[in-house]
Length: 262
Image (cartoon, rainbow, N blue to C red; front, side, top):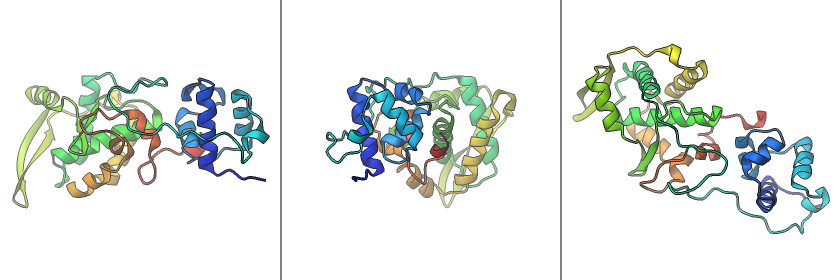
């Protein structure tokens, strides 16, 4: 009997789903799993148990014998390719609606947590914010700071950050200082206003804390080398906005969600 590997199985599911005109969100709901878990199945990175396979056969209308045969129709490639700012997504609108208060609170708490670390300059702070936001989106499918990021010079950069920071500086919520480290001038931020944890979910605070624990002591070279190979950045063209949906295509060591539990 022919045995499918996970990549072949995922590719066949993609092909049938597309032929039926179903979105990933539609199919995921029909078989009672999360959309990120379906993404992992279609990419061949998550196993499918017998019960889920029976549901897939029922919803997609295929015969198990035909599906598992060596002569099944040619597999389709999962939807990974580049995502550009003009790409239309049927499953979800992943562009966050910017909420200044939410961003301010996230930034203040992040600065509070990292202010004592001598390595944290402006560039590292922006990369930590990116990881916090995309980690939270991968786990909970919701935006944390509410800001959008753009790929510039091969890495991530918060959009309109100069205007946002000026507003925070003018309102004396933060203070920007210049320090010299190893002969190089660095920009750093100090919080002048305390973050309001009542405006933050416990799960959001946990994501921030865990992300800082992971990368908060890294040098700029280390964190840049790490983020540049994170799938959302890697799969985005230079100058384009980074789509939050790409967090679901992460692989180790970047992925932070336990897909086997969904």
